[in-house]
Length: 127
Image (cartoon, rainbow, N blue to C red):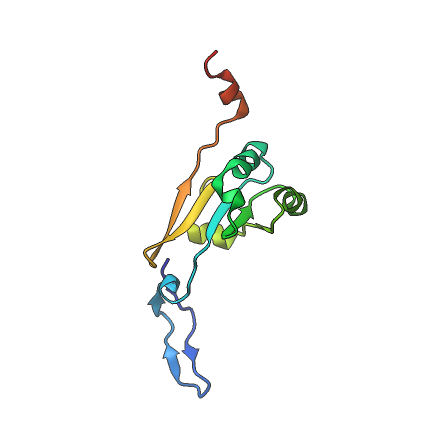
């Protein structure tokens, strides 16, 4: 989660507090206690997984979607839903949905990809 400053950060008197190129981990400075769940809001399998998961009932969960209509999803989930932006996806190095992101040891963001089988995969088991 390291970040490099692209410009000098100055105080109110013009003195440089942090020079361009300074590298820091924002998690060491900014409290972040939420869990982020990223789903494809156009996938009924992922919507079903989310609604059946522990994350659906937790108030500390921030829901980001890669597809679907946020207004419809907000109505279904009865909570705020936000679109995942490309810069956030790149910063977290996301490559699959659903993903669950949590802060670890005030230094890292742990990304866990969740496998949600297709309904046809579930229906085909045991036959």
